[in-house]
Length: 375
Image (cartoon, rainbow, N blue to C red):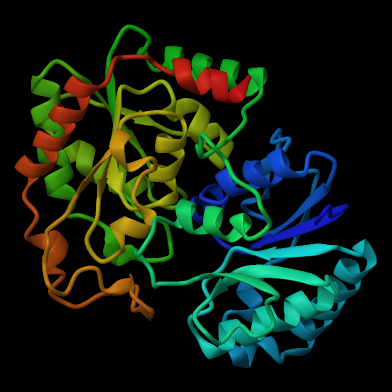
C-alpha cells in the first residue's frame, strides 16, 4: 500500500488558481497524515498557505521567467532552473503531484523537466494523452468540463485521497482578523450591511473588466435597497474604484490600504455581498464565505467560477463565442475580441437581480463563517 513520506505538490500560478488546490491539499493530508507535504508555488501566492496544516513547507519559484521559450534560455533563467532542480532533488520526494493542465507543447515540456528534476518515482497529474511522464493520471476533458477544484480532487484521487467536505481554505490569524475589524470600524461600516464592489480584474486579462458605468448603476440600485456600498481595488486599480465612485449617485466608501491577499480576504469577510469580475479578489471573497456575484465574459465560469457554485452566482451572456479564454483544450487569448460583446452587452439589471436573489437566499453572517476558517 502506498505510504509516501514526502509529497511535493506543484502549483505555479496566481491567487485564485492556488486557492482552488486547497481542497485537494486537505484530501492529501487526510489520507497521509504523517507525510511531509511541500508546495512549489510562486512568491506572491505563498502566503495564502500560511497557517494551513495541510502543507508543511513551501518552495518558491517565479514561474514567469519560463512563460515563453525565448526567455527560458537566458543565462539567469537557466541558473534559476538549475538551483530549483538541485533543491527539489535534495528533498528526495516519494510523490510529485502536478496541479496544471498540460495543453501546450511548451507547458508539457516544462513540467516534464520539473517533475524529472524531483526524481520522484510516483508522478501524478492530468493527462490529455501527451503526459507520458506521469505514472498515474486523471483524464483532462478540457477547461470547464469540471471546476478546477474538482479537477484537482480527481488528481489526488489517483493516490486514494479524498475530501468528503471540500471547501477552499484560507487560514487567517486572530491578529489579522482583529486588524481587519479595526479597519472596518474606522470606515464606519460596523452597523451596515455592506456590498463590496470590485471593478478590476488583475493583470492577467484587463479585458475581463465589465464597463465601469455598469458597476456604478448596480451600486446605486443596491444602495437604494438600503445597503452600504464599499469599493475595493487590487494593485494599480485605485483609479477604477474612484471612477465608479464618481459615477455613482449614492454615497460609497473606498476600502484602501490592503497590501496583501490575506489583508484583503480578512476585510472582505465582513461584507454582506461581493460583486466583481473574474479575479483573485473574487476568489478571496468566496473563500471567506461571502455570497459572491461573479461577472464573467471571456473567461470560463465553469472552471473558475466562485466555489462552491451553489452558494454563489455567475452572471454572463450565453454567447456562442463565450468563453474564448481557457475553453475546451485551447488557452485562447486573454485580450478577447475588439467588440467584447460578452461584457459590453451585459446589462446592470441582470447583475442587480442576481445580487438581490443571493441576499434573499443567504443569512447575514458578517464574517462568522470566515472567523471559523481562520481560527
